[in-house]
Length: 258
Length: 53
Image (cartoon, rainbow over all chains, first blue to last red; front, side):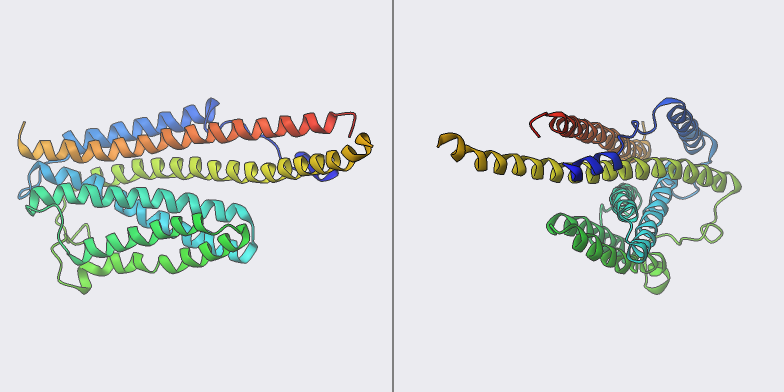
């Protein structure tokens, strides 16, 4: 009884996320930024000399690829902080960023594949950049799968944190793969890629718009993880309470029968 | 519509559908989990108020 009371006092039900005036500001800003990005991608930016309009797909592709790297960087940072502080909020941030990072890597692979089909004539080729990106995707899918198969909460968090730190090693490998190995993939430098000022501005606005979207997704997923943790704790209390009541009932039942 | 624009449309459609789909999915799950948490808290409150305990 006292355990349940203490736990209930400690926990508070938070308001729904991103609703009210804060939600209005965030979602309105997001829509304006996304509208501006779409306008610049489809109307403002000129068509590329060789690739034509297919080049416009690369603005979204570069933005989601950059955000996948950023999300996995946050996983590594949050994992280090969890191992240092042992605060479950860092673990929640790590899992939220990992899931969003997997989503953005999926989008990177899908948009790159669609672009490659048009420009290279194939949906997929075992190019170093593509292969290392696929490996990155598998690493973080494994990270999420690993979390599902470890029942003990502390062990799960600790093992996932170590995995999250080790996994981020693939990010610089993906980045430098076009320089280390012979690759079909365009180079990652804006100046070496021969972009005009309009193209660079379009890329910047697109990256900013997708970055805001990425942080909204990480925040939402983080709140879900915190709510799940809260639910898990309360479920244990309810289960213990039911056990206590059952034991009390079993203890009093023979006396009543006698 | 040229083939280039078809690829462009498919590419951005995939990106938008997955991003907004994920946002809607996660927001829906938050509501579900919070409803479950609220129910459990009410159950615990009710148990705490029972005079027999």
